Image (cartoon, rainbow, N blue to C red; front, side, top):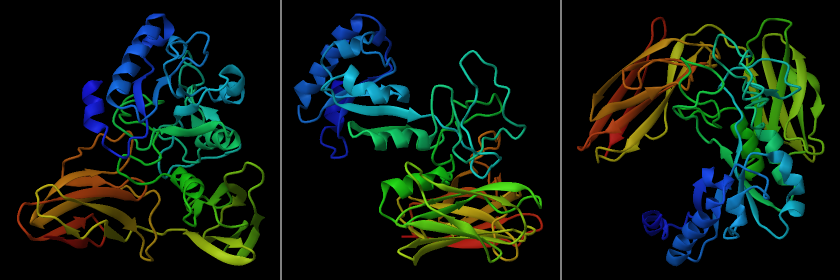
Length: 406
């Protein structure tokens, strides 16, 4: 604890200290002693920031870390059902949601209907019988762990009650391990707002619409389905009064968020073509977004986040690899194997595609696309020059991007 405080106390990004996460002493009287001891260590080294801890026992009468009286801020993990009674149960206390959500999603995978929340599995004692042979979870934000809740369910509560100071979402990124709810070969989590390759899932745009001032209009899902299938079409938006949806030029109606709504929905029988959303404020167009029915895979597109990196042997350029049809639309189900070659002043640091059950290597110079995307990471050498990165796949037009190492 002393090492941690001394290391980080001059970092302006640190706004509070935590002495632990779900530590077992909260369930017996030793929790009183150890909480006071740890808080004293923090306060002796830095008395400018409050101290919290992440409690998994939400009943204060049973929680011995709370009973210590030493915590400045009470941090609770999950248990959103207790939020409404917090002022009554903990009068005068300050509160933060230390860990929330545990909602699942697989980027680019969708199924319907989306009208209710699913818990996979339904309890700690229940066998997991839901799911599918793709080891995927719908990206509509309607599936959560039995101990958790969806992103929208929890954020609505945080917004509703002024005494809730905020939340920490589990988790920002997918990560290796905790592949709940699926068994092997699932080997990374499904919790992230962003997948393991760094590609945003759809709920990313819900947070962007709520937590930033940036104008947002995000339409989901993709628009490649069987003709006649009824598809739940969602839109996240902000800085607007309404969103109108069009299919091949025909209006399907205008929707506005009502009450606590965080998105709007249409149920649309699929027909190939162009699905377009238009957001408006005071009758003026704010943003438009389109989803087009994609054809056959035709070419590769490479998008480097930076084309100029430092010659320090460490700097990185992240290259998004997209599988497109002839018109430039991403293929939502493309799984082409893409091979990479790199020449010049750089090396291939890693590859990924965000698939939670993929057994592919993170280091081999190839990767299958997952729902049309994969990632390659180029690492600079220690001498300046150029890096030429090329991606090829059978039957597709290859693509090349040049990175300058300076």
